[in-house]
Length: 354
Picture 1 (cartoon, helix red, strand yellow):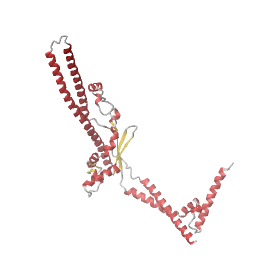
Picture 2 (cartoon, rainbow, N blue to C red):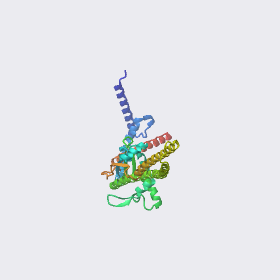
Picture 3 (cartoon, rainbow, N blue to C red):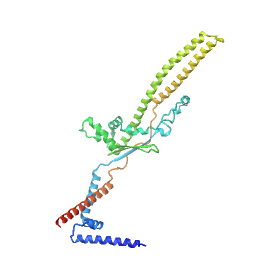
């Protein structure tokens, strides 16, 4: 059976001996090292021999990270937490009207809890041109009580006005505004990042207001068209109902005593049946029109706000520690690449001379 501890010790001693040989070669000015022949021990020895260059790269990268951490503006992120009101049993609110609900059920009209969740539209609404422009042209107050629009804050004033909004829209959705949703719970977050905490919170809250307002306008357009159709149809059926009533009244006045005449009885039943059917149709249309009118005129919010945006206490960027570590690693990597490149050029020169 193989002695595993002994094998490991022999490998370690072999690596140490190769590193020592490579270091001896370097100490004897046998630079460069043939990395193909020496392998990893030679690479380690080369890096140890070039420790001044590696250290310089590390220190330079750290200094760049520290300077960037001080120079870059602090970025604050405010988040408003919302949920679609349909998550609480539908946003229609008509189901609480007992009289209309009972009548609507008789005619197969579902008025409670059946409205689909509108939250899937929220990202598209926020990215729409109209909502984006309203967010950008709204005047906001920052921590210094300076009032200005978001366009004036994020776009240079010397750019033509027609291009200012286009550039501001791209910057808004690329760097400032983010929408995130948890599909399981239906909870969404509208996140706004800005260089001022008060400004970030105010923009987040304005986004909520514009989101709710725009969706209500969309819903009003659909329900408004439905109400106009129902009202027009109801007026037509009302005229038919008056004609049916007049026909039935004229028949009864002309035939007060129909006796045992089968023909007169049949005509009376036809007129009565026509009157009843027209009356039922009129009542059905009237009920649907009332429901549509309530749906159009109600002002229930589509968004239930769990938490409004508030000014954050600490910035989320730049991360000074992360920048320092990142640029330290980058500086070390660049120094290592320089050492390897120098060693490769020196090896090539030796081969040419040899």
